[in-house]
Length: 169
Image 1 (tube, helix red, strand yellow):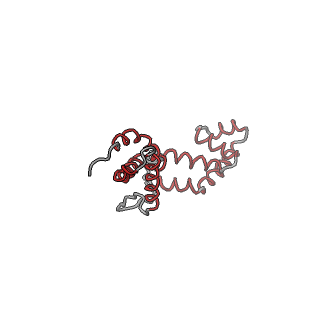
Image 2: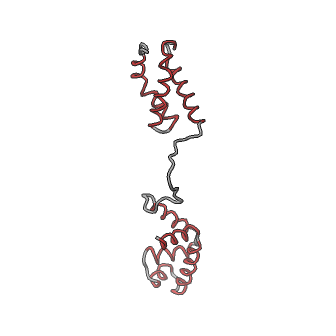
Image 3: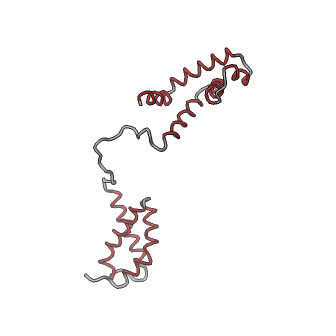
C-alpha cells in the first residue's frame, strides 16, 4: 500500500502537539509516544477519507479512544518477579528521610518537657546537669523525665520497628 498524500507532512508538523496531548493523558513519555504511534497507525489507512480541513480533530479522537481501550485493559505493565519484597531495601536513597520522619513523629508524641529533655540530652549531647541548667530544673527531674520519655519512645510503633530492624541487620 502506498503512503497517503500529505500524511508524512502532517506527522512532521503535528507530532509535537500530539505527543504533548498524549503525555497529558498517560503521564509517561514512553507510553505517550506509543499512544501517538498507535493512533497514527490507525489513521494511516483512512487518511484519504479524512476531511482535509481539520485532520487534528479526527486524529485526537482516535488517540483518545485508543487510550480509553488501553485504560480498560486489565494489564497495566507490571513485570512479574520471582520474589516479591515485603519492604524496600534498607539501603534505599530515601531511608534517611524516612527515618527522620519516624523520629520526628515519635518526638512529637512526647509531652513538651520530655521532648526538650530528650533533645537536649541526646541531640545536643548535654549532660544531665547541663540539661537541668538549661531547663531550670533539678537533675532528678531531668533523670525522671528522660526515663519516662525513653519508655514512651520504646513503645512508639514506628520507632520500635525501626530499632528492631536495626538490631536484626
